[in-house]
Length: 173
Length: 160
Image 1 (cartoon, each protein chain N blue to C red):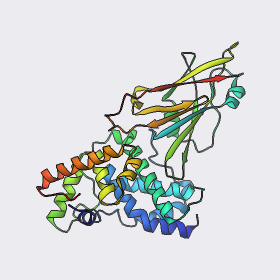
Image 2 (cartoon, each protein chain N blue to C red):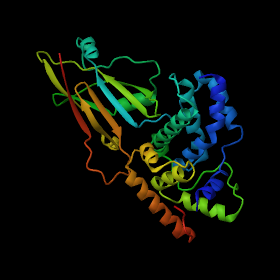
Image 3 (cartoon, helix red, strand yellow):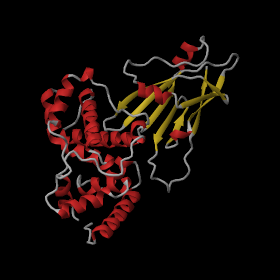
Image 4 (cartoon, one colour):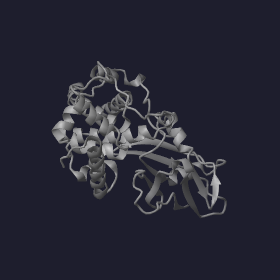
């Protein structure tokens, strides 16, 4: 097998008739088209903890998230529920709103913003995040104060070292 | 992006992207869904591209990422796709083409996608590694193992 032979074989695999026309028509009616199989799992997630969100939501019960664009889909909501947020080691009922962004290289990121209440009298809390077990493919690979980056690990990278599945950040008033 | 620029992008890339998605999913139906979604993202993308090559590379990356997401999706997990799902099953000119196609399709996904990006897209190892999110050495290993498996299946030498 060489590249030319491979191309000849796979050039025979074609989409159904009228495929390109459907794509062109799709853009005309795009507002009526749901994203379809936009997926419940994530290539990459940046969870940014916002001081603004914390302050805005400090007076409310429980942890709540900042409202994001009206493009939040059911899929994203499902994903949000899979992130657990812990404040000082105690799980809190956080709502993380997630939006999709694509950079100039075509990398897809899902950016989540969460707000948490600071317990009374606390000037600084430690907040940690974790996926539930079903999202074990994903890992926190870097982070810093107010920002945690979660990058999907290819499931085939079995030779890589153990990947942490939780990360911690510190927020303070 | 204007409608004309979009039309050109679709014309230049739709089949190529369709085959990338197919190499992940083994289903022409899923591949069509993925490619439509990729072009929807292009249409909504509000940043400037440097040139056509930039658009093509952007589309490739988005297609790979969408394909990865598709095969990990909740919907997909309920499907049992062992065999290829082709819109036109009898599309090959001769039996040797069919045999090569079958041999590639029988490869594990991680080998199959690397093979497609290398042999069809003609991408260098470095770019394949970046697209798949693995090390260059892992891509080389996958290609090597894929060639071995195809060779065992077809009993022929595989060009590198």
